[in-house]
Amino acid sequence: MGRAISQLGGELPRADFVVLVRLAQTSDAGDPCRLRDLAHAEGLDQSTMSRRIASLAERGLVERRPDPDDRRAHRLQLTESGAAALAAERARRVSLVTDALAGWDESDKAELARLLGKLTDTLDSRRTPWRHTG
Amino acid sequence: MGRAISQLGGELPRADFVVLVRLAQTSDAGDPCRLRDLAHAEGLDQSTMSRRIASLAERGLVERRPDPDDRRAHRLQLTESGAAALAAERARRVSLVTDALAGWDESDKAELARLLGKLTDTLDSRRTPWRHTG
DNA sequence: CTCAGATAGTTGCATGATGCATACATCTTA
DNA sequence: TAAGATGTATGCATCATGCAACTATCTGAG
Image: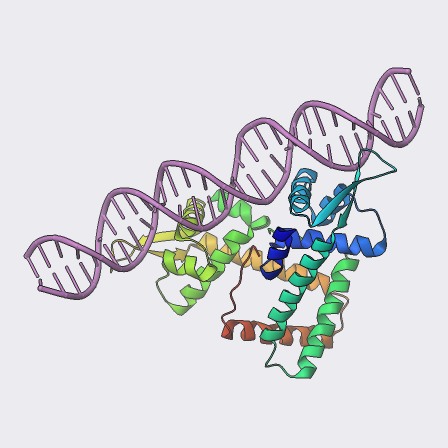
């Protein structure tokens, strides 16, 4: 817990961040998020995601609860610390962008936001394969 | 040489790509590009860049010529194969974007291009630290 | 001119992330 | 009930990386 709090001030590694983002999404959707889904969503091997989750669980950011419907599986969810770490990292990133665009006029900022949103939608609808390493 | 040609059809790893891009830039500028400069530009350790260059040189994409003014150093430059591989990778990436934006109207595409160019300039002028891994 | 220190680059070594193959438990279906 | 599929974890080899140490060369103070 102290460990998680200490992370709030620092930088959350990208690998951790993307997992927390996915977990927050599925948590919003109310789905029981499983390891395999996360691995597939990120284009990673199950074994890699297993180790990432183990690491996040050790640090108290993610909770692995037994799935009552399938005793092989776990239901993954953010802990309070995990949600806090995610919020802090998002805030840090928003600050980076806000600072970088401080000199821009409002219309350009609004237009960029609109077009990036549209781009995200376009890529999602095409299920564009996304490699973090390539 | 056959190795380099066979790469033209495939995907150039990002680590190789960014090095070739830098080399093409400095080649345009006419500067003798050295290892240390490349490493610093990418925020990597010299030893890492040394290994990347060694790999690119083995594959015939980069040439290491002795620096006539400093016998410790090498002058790095793209080979013909390297320039071809870079051009092919750039074309592949342009195709990805072109395909993804195929359904967009021209005005939005032009506006996105303008704003991304402006963003690039803004980030460059701020010397924003850029981590490929974070 | 000479020698101490700086600099360009390479290599040894340990570390961490990854994928594949495998193992084990549990579920599903014939 | 047995055979195969599925969810997850682990052993193992591989690869990229940073740090430290090394060689060769350059530079500057004396």
